[in-house]
Image (tube, rainbow, N blue to C red; front, side):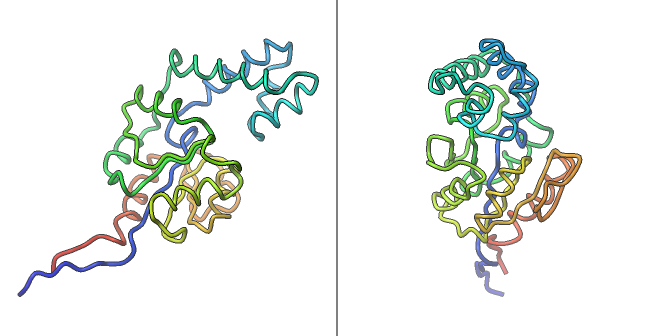
Length: 222
């Protein structure tokens, strides 16, 4: 029998959120916002509750409307950069196995953070960085806009319908759904509204994510 390379179908791609999905940064985020709030004489818990639901400039407008938002952002960035250098970070269980197994050209990072911080955290946790990384500076509209995920797909050369989004937060889930992609939620006790599948942890999702990536687009010899 003659060996022949056959294409099973269109390649599948996986697009990952970072904080809360691959990197456990909740404690770090709380400390950064608490320190920021202290500088402005604000209640740390109140500020963090707002920061969880909004982007920084929107947070400043709500919790510190009398302050210069550019100065507020500069202070936040200073604290976040310092945290990347000195804070303690951990990758979620399963992240290293998952990212090391997926081909680098088959996945991307889509984050509301900035690339230099993501690279710093990945270096400290030993995670690989893919070719495509869409950060806050790459788009004019962040999550829940679909723009970040659509840009990642474009840079991968993928169609949205062939992309799987892995997210932990409502704004990211909404972004993936609006982009016309399959969205799975991880690292939450309760499923975020709209997800196609829910996993209590990233570790639980690893076999299914790898199966999704390999189900189509793999070549076999027959």
